[in-house]
Image (cartoon, rainbow, N blue to C red; front, side):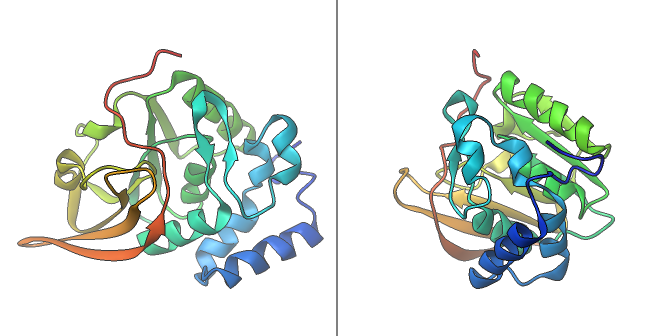
Length: 221
């Protein structure tokens, strides 16, 4: 259950303290990110018999063969993105909606896209219950981004591509940042931070990760 602010009744003070302790242990030190993750109850995005494990630092299965990432990875990706209060953020891969909910507490506007209609529908329901009015959820092929709303200050991709997708790079503002998992298999992937400069792009490799692949087209749910 969640209250009007989206804080689950199961997300009590002791669990919050332990949850934040795990995040700091893994290197999530940005105070704004930690505050956002404290405010968003992960339990609201996990259903079925996995709900009891919502506050553990581990990925969990969700609908459509997808996963909700482990909180420490969500925190580190959000920290690397360095979202500012006036930023407009594009997220590719809504999944459960947990990442977008965290971004909504950091940015002015969040656009999130997923190829699975049932996932976007479920995420919208949770966002409404939480009162998160600055998130726009769309069902479409995320590999092409959202050119009609770009360019974006920040882009976060939660599925792995062989290379940072060209259409997404072009929708990034100069000075903007994209964080994306890159790899040619589901076992060897690296999280990459891309910063758009006046004359090109700068790339920084952050850490090894494992994400589902970025697939073109929309799914038949």
